[in-house]
Figure 1 (cartoon, rainbow, N blue to C red):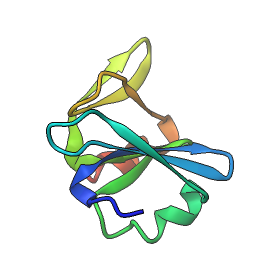
Figure 2: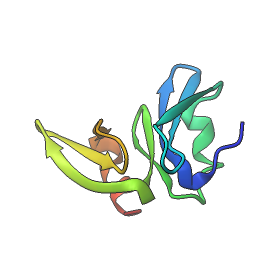
Figure 3: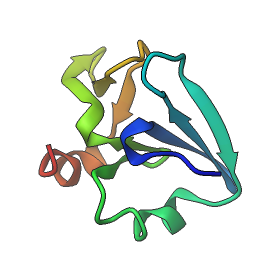
Figure 4: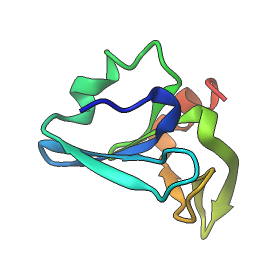
Length: 99
């Protein structure tokens, strides 16, 4: 599997699997399943603008359009998707420094 960094929107943890959501310009959002964990991916992705924002999510910070409060929770909105991505209190300060 080969996905361009600029195409990655976010990653979602599902036990021992990670769903990678990406969008090639002009196309619909796609997803790929990777047998790995977010914890294992954090270090190799450290030099890239992909950061952990929640226990179950990592997002491409270059795709963030806005961070806002939604029903007492902080969420990030990304280019090309309508679904809000949660930002937990645990990762908020760590995550915000990369924006």
